Structures are given as structure tokens and as C-alpha cells.
Length: 202
Picture (spheres, rainbow, N blue to C red):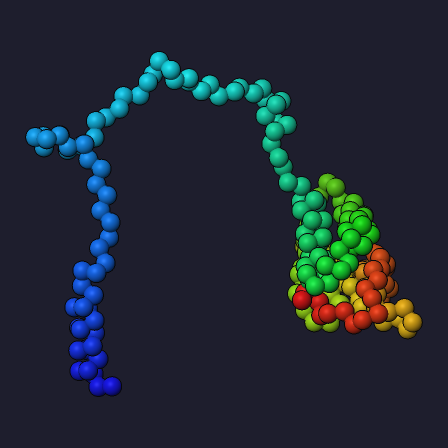
């Protein structure tokens, strides 16, 4: 279509639709007959019936108990739990959620707390989680990293095992830097089924 034909078409549609849509006009005015007062009358607040709010006062001890301090150790353990559940993904969790929350998560918490307790309590907290999102078939969930030593202290993995006559199992384990990450330290196992499980994080 030529350019001038497009312009004519747009102009025709604009002229034809002109005035078809008119937005509603809601004007709430209290205008008297002589049009002297156009604004609404101002309402005075009722002070006699009002109650003043007096903020409660707390002693220093009460204020200290009300402050919520997030412990870095708790944050680290919760982060580890989140990474583990995220690794499994919603398709796997729908089938094995109960087993994971009842068996694997408490064991993971115990292992993490044990590693945290091995830290020097007088020194600053230096452990952190390095996340490696590995969808597909990779084992890695996360690594526990010590900032002070500048090395990975532990590697947490989940492996899918196909056992003949039994089916598929998820084997949760971790490796330590102390043994050059060679030994599998078990956390727990969860049975999937005889069918092949979906990819991680799916």
C-alpha cells in the first residue's frame, strides 16, 4: 500500500471515531445557586471524641529481648537447605518431598552444624556457600568455602544411582578437603522409583 493511501486511511478513521468515546466527568462540587461557593465545606475534626495514642515504653531489658539478630550460622544452614531443595527441583520434590524433609534435611543440618562447630568460636565467622547451579545430571549441590583459609572445605553432592532390581535412588553425600575430596561421607538416601528420574532442577 502506498504511503499516501495509508495517510488517508488513518485520517478517515480518526475523523470517523471523533467524539465516539467521551470519558466520564465526575465533578463533585457543592455549588449554591448563586455560584459563590464552589468548594466543599471543610469538616472540623472532633477533638472531644478523639483518643490520643501513647506509645508503650519498654525497659532496656525488654528492648534487648525484642531485637532479632540473625545468626550467620543459622543463615548458612538455611541457605544449605534451600540449595538442596532447589537442586532437586519441583518435579522431583513432588514425589520425594516427605522423605527429603524427614531424612535428608535433618542430616544435612547436623552435618553443617558439626562443620560450623569445628570453627574457632573466638574468630570471625568465615564460612560461606559457593553455589554452582548444575541442572541436568551433574552431582554438585554447593560447596562450603572458608574465606580465611581461601579454600573449599566441603563439597555437597547428590548422585542418582540405578540399582538393578531395586530402581533409582538419590544418594546425598559430601566430600571433605581433609581427605582430598575422595571419600564419600553419607548424608542419606531417598528412593525414587523404577522409572528414570527427571533432570535436576526441572
